[in-house]
Length: 167
View (cartoon, one colour):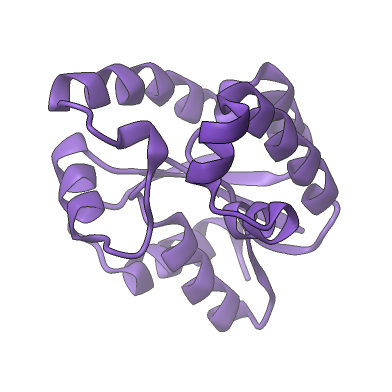
């Protein structure tokens, strides 16, 4: 089974995916990290050199490759922007939306010193809302399960997921 965690950047997809992988003795695949490994540069640099559209095409190719893999898949928050990816996710995986309110996402992103997020660089809160809000109905439509992650630890979220999808 492929379990895919979706949600906006900062929702905890990779962190929760790692916890789930440990609890279920399976592998966790961070799609963005796989893309970085393939292209040999940070995603932000790829965005600058090739643009978002080229990145989304590469992301779709990688998504197709990994949907045939059993385990936990954590794609980037924008993977749902392409209709092709929406269909792939709905048809080929169990999808869990890690729902998080914007204030909590902004707090987490601000505290994350590891990941640079090109779509949020130099953006006002209003501009971030303009990116975030249109994605919500897409996340909700694709998801088999929706989990509110606000005020929950990654371990608590993983336990809720395991209750919903079984282990």
